[in-house]
Structures are given as structure tokens and as C-alpha cells.
Length: 130
Image (tube, rainbow, N blue to C red; front, side, top):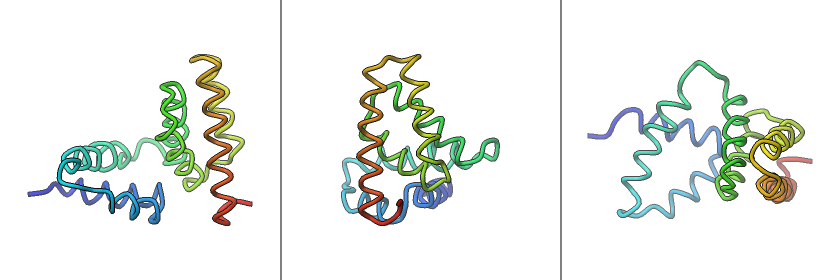
């Protein structure tokens, strides 16, 4: 029996990252990856992102900072896009990246700026951002 948190996690993830992203991601799902996906849906999205203690915009900014610090550009781009969906401005995201660069290292910051430029270009091409 699947946890109701998994369904809530799917809903929240879709709201944050966008339906197009989550639909595309679902097409890549296979039996091998299913346990990890369920874990992420239940605990990451269905439990932590569902908590009322912080607004999604702030959760997005925190997540961007953490992923910038870890230099995880694939997930970083995903959450930069999610941050825009959650009401973050590109300037706010840049400020988080600059903060991370000072405390985590300039290479991580430079990679994060590169990732953000790619995300902004994609959003402009998709007519989501002008």
C-alpha cells in the first residue's frame, strides 16, 4: 500500500517544478528507479516540502543555496526553475548563488551562475520569462 504522502509529494513536486517537467520525468520511470522515486516523493516532497513552517519561495532559495554548495548542477537547474515557479526573482537566486560562492568556493559559484544562465535562456525560449 502506497503512502498518501507519495501522492501529496507528486502534487507538490508538480506545482513547484511544473507539470511539463514532472510529466517528462515520469516517462523515464522504470522498475529499477521506482523505489528511489517513491522515497523522494514521500519524504522530500510529501513530508518536508509539505511542512507549513516555510513558504515555498524560501524553501526554493534554501535548496538553491545547498545545491550550489554541493555543486550539483543538474538538480540546481531544476530547483532554479522551481524557484522561479515559486515566485523567486532571478536577482534573488543570484544573491543566493553569490552567498554560496563566498562560503563554499568560487568554482561552485561560477558553475551555479552558468547553470542559472542556462535556465534563464530556457525560460525565455519557453516564453515563461522575458
